[in-house]
Image 1 (tube, rainbow, N blue to C red):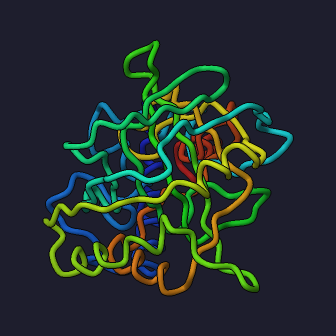
Image 2 (cartoon, one colour):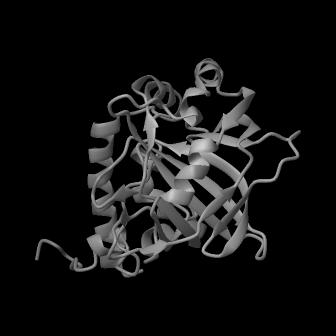
Image 3 (cartoon, rainbow, N blue to C red):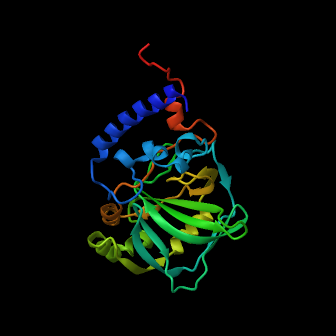
Length: 280
């Protein structure tokens, strides 16, 4: 990397670290984890923390993005072939309330996305929602992580937003049925707890909502490209009580919005026109 670019990235990082510390404060996350979402381990320095994480600052295919009709594709025929209710294991991991298949369960969780079949690996919550929709943001986004049944290791992630209740709406069961587990995790983040999850509304959401598709990346290190994203335009109803319970456990765990797919990486763009000596 040219010296002038290294200097520019360093200046940009110092500025953004100061800004993120002001907004999010210190000590939000444990220091024993390899990366964070603010401060000295936040997204602006992920590429400096490991040689394997360079894509975080160079890739032109990074997630999350602002979902727009003119930059994403509307996909028809998406389906979650999930059981309506199923037993999962809930635990806290890597800044996310990560909900994973219960090891004793023998039910199958298959998704049909873009005409291909995928198996569910796990799902978790991001606060606030990582993607935006036509510049609008949401308090929560659930990521359903799937692996291809045809190409091992190929990931497809379905994002569904959660938005605050309107009128006589009730919270979706995916939020309301986790309250007991969240209360326990708040006191003991090492706990691994069973939870029965109701998928009825989620299954309907995927079948009836407009689903926006794009080819992006992992939204955390190593920021690997080639992750297929399917984001529902219709949010699930979220109660304030459920949101507060989630927030207390997960804290802030979302990467900032990246550039449109194919456009320069934001970190590279920030210093793309910097001169070797900015004072000259």
